[in-house]
Length: 452
Ligand SMILES: [Zn+2]
Image 1: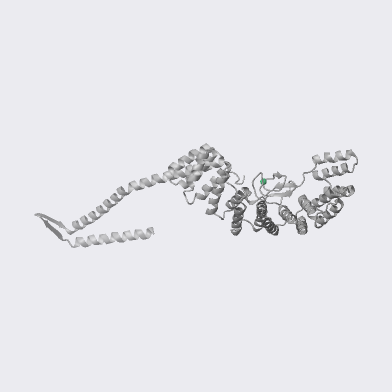
Image 2 (image 1 turned 90 degrees about the vertical axis):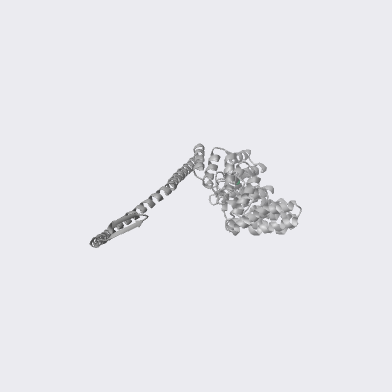
């Protein structure tokens, strides 16, 4: 490149020299007359004057450009520095939020707001800074301002939902969740939060619509959707029964059983209504199928009720029929032990309890053993021994929430402790290793878990 340019300059210089020599060899004069003025000069001088004038014009033009353009360039530089300082404040503010330093975050938020004329960028920082310093009105204002911006509206709604829940304003949280769902029905946490909120206040039908939408968009897995739908149907069946429509209630319970017969709440609900409708034989079949999938003492009680048998000895045989498909299960042995105890068959009761207890009998087994010894009128020392063992025995199966671990006296669809729907399972404590918490609990909520 440089070589080419040098060669070009040589060529131009040579051409100029040749032209000068050519002009010197051919001298001539130029005469100009204008209003009594007369100018006599040589052609060379005229040519030099023309070249000088051209160079002067170019220089003037460049000077003009520099003068006109300078303020703009200056302003540009100033704006650039403002933006840089604004982003710096924004970054420092976000770092302060991460570190939990509310005052520092708020200081930087104000600085960023003043320096950057881009509200969407600074609003989130302002909202989080306000949250950190406990300024509820400030954060609410910032989140509300986000709703104005199309891009930020969803983030604003998320903040408002979390804040409403923390304030205990369920109705407000629900209305924000509905708006968020309209904006982004494909976002998992929106679907799960809305579903849980609707379920918590007993809007079963709406919860089912949300669930269906989640299934369509594959936000909820097929398997989870199936059981949740079944439990919603159980609740709808209860509500329908309360309204006096038993036939509809039965139809809903049957639909639920078709979806999730492995849920105790589902099988017991259907059997209950079948017994109520006078269809004991169907109830027996429902309970046998339910027991084979998930045994529970409630099912035994319903089974005995459906059988209509009152003779204690015959009831032992009936329970034996119920547990036939799962004879080695703890619940099966306990159910048989209880039936044997009621029939006064002490030896049989002890045998079933031994089978149920194994090497470390649970509290329920120990208590039943004590009862057997008491009623068999054997040694009182044995009774006391079993009662003492019950106090330190491993905990029994109970209705435990797989999301928060809370224990409940009886089954309910919504956990009273964490508000999650369909998370209560009949299990011993510490057996959740293979159970995933409900997806809603996995949501990394902005600040607090949404379903708390
Ligand atoms: Zn819970």
